[in-house]
Structure formats: C-alpha cells, structure tokens
Image (tube, rainbow, N blue to C red; front, side):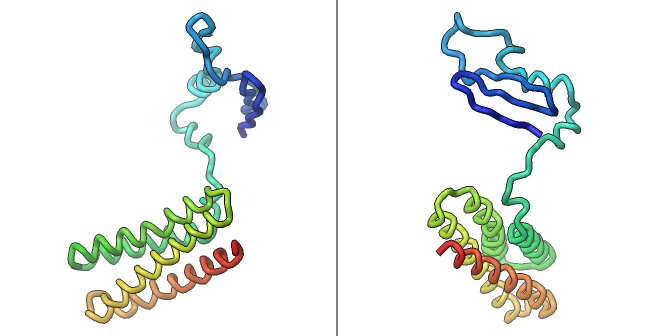
Length: 173
C-alpha cells in the first residue's frame, strides 16, 4: 500500500511501512540532489522488487472493479469472437469492433470525470455504442451471417448492459 502525503516541498510516501520523501521538483542545478535522494521511491522499488513483483504494486483503478465495466469487456470479447469466427465484410468488422470497444472505454473515461454531467455524457455514449452493436448484430442475424443462438446470447448480454448503464445515467440526473 502506498500512501502519498503532500507537503509544501516534499511528497512523503509510505510503502509497506517504509516512509520516504520525494522532492516535488528540483529548481536549478545547484539545488540538485543525488539520484537516490531525488527518487527514493523508484530506487526502493527497483532495488527491492523484481519485475514480476512490480505487477503486484500496480494499483487497480476504481472503474476496473465496476460490474458494468467487467460486463462491457466481456461483451467486447464476445463481439471480437463473432468478428474472428465469421466471414464478414471488412467495414462490418471495423464497425462492430470499434463500437464494442467504445463501450468499456467510455465507461472507464466517464468514471474518471469529476462532474455528474461529464460522467453522464460518457455513460450515455457507452450506451449509444451498445445500441450500435445491437443494430449490427440484428442485421447480421437477418442476413444469416451469425446464428440466432449467437445473436440471442449477445442480445441478452446487451440488454443487461443497457439496463445497468440506464440506471447509472438516471442516477446522475
């Protein structure tokens, strides 16, 4: 766990109970400190941990814990599966791939916004991209490019995603 505490000229960091202070900036050459003093946190990490251990240090962003984000990623993967396993026109592949990818990206970007209005806008865009995917899948089903079973599974997942996004949007109004 890393704890950052701002002070006027230093950033104090606690990493597994070890407190280090990192200067916020070095003003000129005469004030320049040794490399270990300027970046003790980086020095500590590079000396104490192997590359595989550093993956454990990478923090998870809040949006990665959202159910809607996880479901949006799974929906995108399912759409990519349709793209890879069916001979579709290039423009259809591109459209479905971009629209399905847009859903988790807009959820992630929206979750990083501070105002309710901004978050609502991104979640609305994610839902609109979901509707775009539904339209593509509907047309592919009508043209027998994908099976009705594949389409039904994706439509069920899309319906659930749509309902969650709708609730999120309404809660921000």
